[in-house]
View 1 (cartoon, one colour):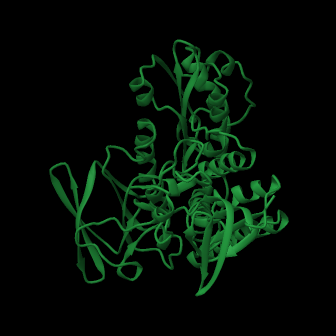
View 2 (spheres, one colour; view 1 turned 30 degrees about the vertical axis):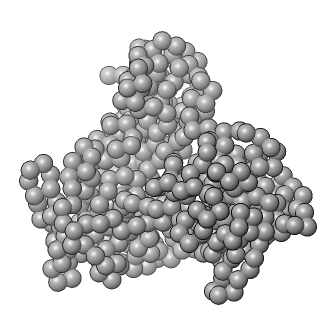
View 3 (cartoon, helix red, strand yellow; view 1 turned 180 degrees about the vertical axis):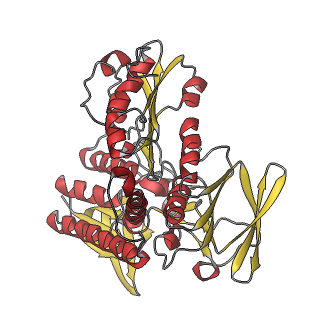
Length: 472
């Protein structure tokens, strides 16, 4: 498809879960594709975010479960402990294997991997700089998939990096030790997950969130329940609170936490900033070629993902919209089909699953109860609890619940919200149901295998219908 005037039909800038998926799909459709990446294949998700943090969480969960093995009749000889170096070695091996897997897929699909930092010389030309060696590439189309990176949000008095005891998620996934005392700022997914990791390994963790509940973007009941569960691993949760300032005291930080009108001082060894990301657009000359930027990143014209330059598209975190890896992948596929097939398809955000990988896990899709009410729906709410469920009891994973939001007029499922074991795997029943506009009548008559945790979803459907079988 490429012409003599262009080195590629599509150049994808960024090899994260949006960029590498887009590059492979474009190659599958017959395009000549290059993918430029300034650092590691897999982007933030694979190297600094999703994958390494989940590897760490898995180790902590196994450690915590082993300490309670006697509850299942399992005898462990000697004191249960952990080797943090081995936890991190395992994490590194997983990341390297996944990274190599992306490289293999590029070779298999004949995607040319170009290493270096890309900047635009004109709307069809980029210069890629790799340690001072520069290469000029011309392409018919571009997909911007540079992702985002952590920033140090300003806290009065707090300055420095890893050596000064100020971490972001980047330092957390490359930690060399478990701090004795830690303050985590931000009760979203990042803050909660690392609070679980380090709290579960024995660190005295204080988690500070300014909103009334943890994970404020989720249904309110999930945030409240997660707060209760986090306390079980010793995390001190402070919601409706703000980190007013920090003062250095020797090697420690004295943190002033304001809750209401009271101020509490907490001394910690590490402050982990679990909030704040910025789009990776600096130094690319995007504004000079007509790609418009807004405060959070690259501006797209609409959900077709095209920018203000017709042959340049933008996907994933760099747009500053929904910063989730699976959304970036979906957008990458939409953008590629629009470019190569001349379509005007729009990315579909109706049923985007959102997950938090604490223990227990949290998962959500669709409207929260508050959102449904705000949008004027007359709703029915159904709940199913894991506590009486046979599989949950057998596995010793009884914490949590499933909540469904249903339109009372037509019976359509509007939202599904879960907290419990394996709910990040179970949420996709809700994704499919919402995408297909499934109604309560069909859902509560759908057979769910017994014994499974998924029966609790059926129980929630039945409860919304007013006919829950196992409700006390």
